[in-house]
Image (cartoon, rainbow, N blue to C red; front, side):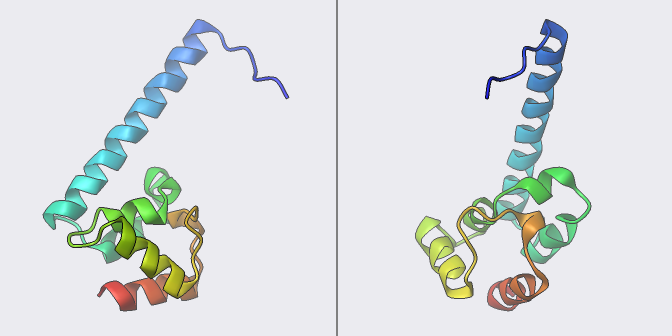
Length: 103
């Protein structure tokens, strides 16, 4: 399947949208690292904020203080969440288990 041909304007719009999403994800990660936002707050925003909903759970967990890649992978494995799962795609039981695990 070939990619659609974009006009220069469409390409510029797509690049701007992608850059904005990266900035929002970087700001989210910084909020988590500095403690300005809690995991529960971010999880609550996943349903309303498209950028947060599309962020991978592993990416968000790695952003928490004292949680690195290995710990984040262990948490996901213990709960039974795939590494590729996105925040918006978590089920109610998965959300509850993550909140119980991360306080």
